[in-house]
Image 1: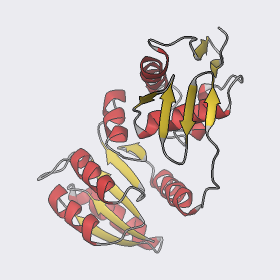
Image 2: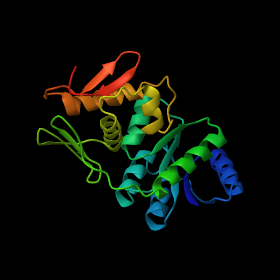
Image 3: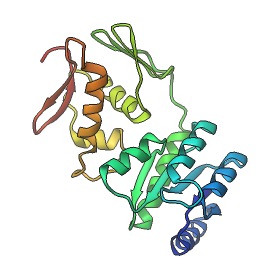
Length: 226
């Protein structure tokens, strides 16, 4: 597997380079955002490890431009910024996963394997999902309610799709962490609550009936009845 590592801290870059090459990965290094973007746009990589704080061009901007160039390449954001808002910005920029420094190298390897595995697994065609006047088309990445198009980020779309596939069933925070965030966040994080609120504003606000419901201490459920 060929990896692009974009990291400006020499000690971190050297540590990761040694560890990854010892695992038989091929690794290209870039010490700033501009070089990282150039390499990502001219060479095929199986995965990108991208620091958020980079000279020349920020990791967020590199992520956005890489995602526009190659929508499918897995991107792992590796950074010292661990607040929920920082994670949300990274994920909304197009990152698939987010790992906060300091980290265990074995965890990084596990996340790389999971990211690449999801890309190589060919998904079967998925039917359009419906609940009341809400529809979600997994293939076209389109969401509508009462005939109105609703614009969602990639993470919001994944969250809504999982809730719809489990409509009328209570899904716990642990379920969402495993299936939507791939265990990327600890259970103490409020990122799920943040994204549920994002969805409510887009999917429920101004519409009836309300479809996204919270069961305190249990989780969330999508259904037509309160």
